[in-house]
Figure 1 (cartoon, each protein chain N blue to C red):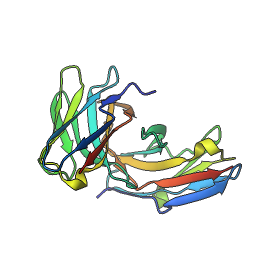
Figure 2: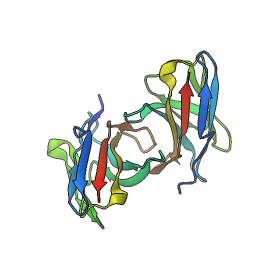
Figure 3: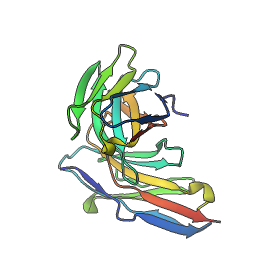
Length: 114
Length: 112
């Protein structure tokens, strides 16, 4: 069965602090895709990153970085020097196809306090 | 901006009624999926359409049905509305061969 777990329900940080959002996934497939999406209050899901199961190279993009570890089935997301505009709900998701059928976690609500 | 548009943005219906939600996919995308997101939860996969046929379905009853049109736009129909159907409904479009999926801004349905 496929499952995505985001154990952190809510996180509050003070502006400029670093924050890491955790994601653990379960799947029986050897080929799969992992995603992070951001959902601001407007409701639209904003794509942040996609990783396939063969690419364990970690990535840094500006203030964002991702740590994919297949051995622990984790795909964590770090925001460096957080800003108020980063306040949103962040979802980790798993897809076993190249389509758009996702399994989402329950989300982590991030509040950045000025 | 993703190019995926949903209508209406908000809707209030009475229990037992029927509702139709609409989604225009991004240009060039031939696959559309629908999701239900209850308050405080992650989106739950309802079903996916490819070439006007259902191509995958989540754990939702048959009163949730859909259509995809030749221009790849899509509709989600829900019959016999229940209070628990109150949620944000999101659609996502992508190309069948892969690439990013883009989500619309959602339709917030309230059943009273």
